[in-house]
Image 1: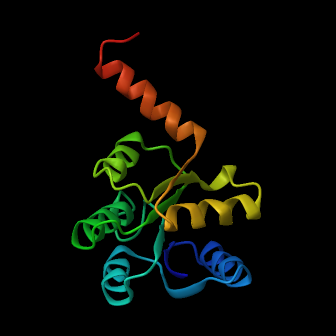
Image 2: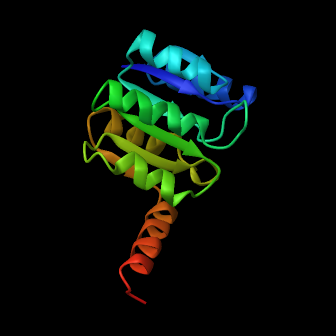
Amino acid sequence: MRIVLAEDLALLREGLIRIFETYGFEVADAVGNAPSLVRALTTHRPDIAVVDVRLPPTFTDEGLRAAIDARQRFPGLPVLVLSQYVEPIYARELLSDGAGAAGYLLKDRVMDIDRFITAVRQVAEGGTAMDPDVIAALLTRHAGHCGVP
């Protein structure tokens, strides 16, 4: 299984590469910014993209924007967001095409490597993997829009 990884923190990026390789994944490319992510996704057409939301140059939402754009060009591209932040609007946008093959995990809540790898495989195979805090944020925001207390 081929992965494109986008993570701006060099130590975390290198650690993730080692983990993926240990579990039999091929890291087709590992990049640290959004423009490089766009090139890597277009060039390598991976089985899954593992993406940080906030990447250089502005550290806002470049990583997720690049992944969503790639999903529009390559429908069904599996994307697993690995972030420090619960951003419900990003999660909703990632899931909005209804294609599945999407995940959103929080970096500081990944406590078990085997479970993390299971989530990566699940998303790559067309499933979803969502952190409970992300789901709660989505439901809270949805309830607020529906007039539900």
